[in-house]
Length: 394
Image 1 (cartoon, rainbow, N blue to C red):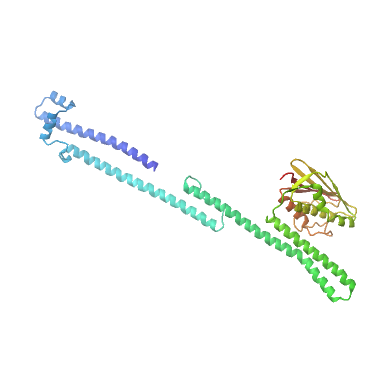
Image 2: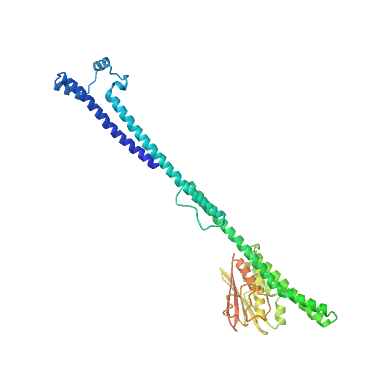
């Protein structure tokens, strides 16, 4: 449109120039005719020159012209030079109108054709979005409502892609979880079936019945622990658990975490030492955080020998609180240290220890769910130190 307007102004300016020259030529031709007629009648050149150069008008002259049929009401056909000018002007305007119309139609056609190609390109991309292909992007090379719409569609596609990926991850996670649970339940279920068959075959053997009844209880406890741990981890992973924020003394938090493990430690002749300032406080979810600490302590009990020690300490700063759980057990092999937080992972050095391989992954999920971190340092045969880091103030 801007180009057309500029072209129109240029054409108008050219038309004025052409018309000025045409009018000037018409006057020259008219004056030439008058001068020729007067010279043929013997009028002196001085009188003719004065008449041609005169600009004075009068009523007498108007009356004379009216007498010979030259008034403003006289049709243009009676003025031969005016008629020529009118015909020339009409031809120029007609040609200019035709050219301008053709240019306008051609410009409109090219514009609409480019827009149609742009719309088809955008529709093709939208169809690829509908088919799940988000590798392409809507055109964004200009301004205006159409490109704003393209930007909005791209943003919508990004949201849909994120949701599809989240759904895919959720399905894969559910598939992996079901696979893990079914795999881990196979062993205790097979053991239960075997124990039940043995008891059924020897119902009168009291010693056998008691022994395998105890083993059934152990297998059931293992299954219960497995299922509860998997349910907790699953709830943490899908974000259905909202952690509380309450202030508590770290000493009370640690005591709550190890309260159910001290009896086991005494029975296995192992020690749990707690050392820290009793007035130090922390803002966290007490129940979940104590479970995370308890899982790490339980893991340490599984990997230290009789007479071993677990030492729990903490240190606070205005920004960060660190709770350290150190033991003097067998330590973690270098090839295992990067895998200990994986579910059901068991090192070849600890195949004969207790546990199902879910305590540390659960602890990690709990700590990270509250915006904290958990790290580990260990040397083989020298012990292990787990460090839980949480913001002092959430």
